[in-house]
Image 1 (cartoon, rainbow, N blue to C red):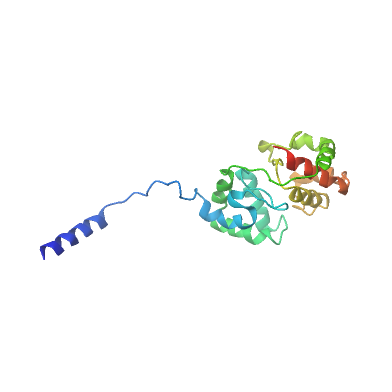
Image 2: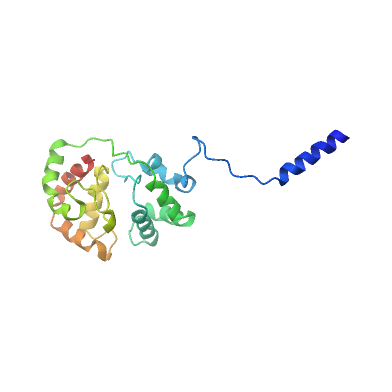
Length: 200
């Protein structure tokens, strides 16, 4: 009887003792993972896409990604694929999702491109350097994304959307980029994409 009473008292004391969260161990997922892991189905583990047409999210600046998700969710950047996932990200916590991907180490697209196409793209990219720099690294302070190592299929599709004013129609901040795209022949987009995909 005394033994049972003693065990009960110990259990009551343990239940009343405040506990602190255990420190993260090496097998625990990084902060924000539980709100962002769904994105991995298309964008790859940690946002490092291996597909030719799906962008790499790892290392993307939080402000840029937050705006992209907000625009997708609001239909300002039309995409039947992305709109529902963007709305989910906003529901779960867009700041946490963006912070998670920003903290991941970026791995350039691992595929290969035609060297001749990349060479032509380097020459054709001269007008792009005014905003993206000579190698496509962008300008975070101005909200200009880093194009280096992104999948070529994705880059080409975005240039075509810019030219047709189908990416974020009416966004005044993209007017200059869209006007530039209109001066570039469609056949050159693949070369530009090949060049930027090979930059590191």
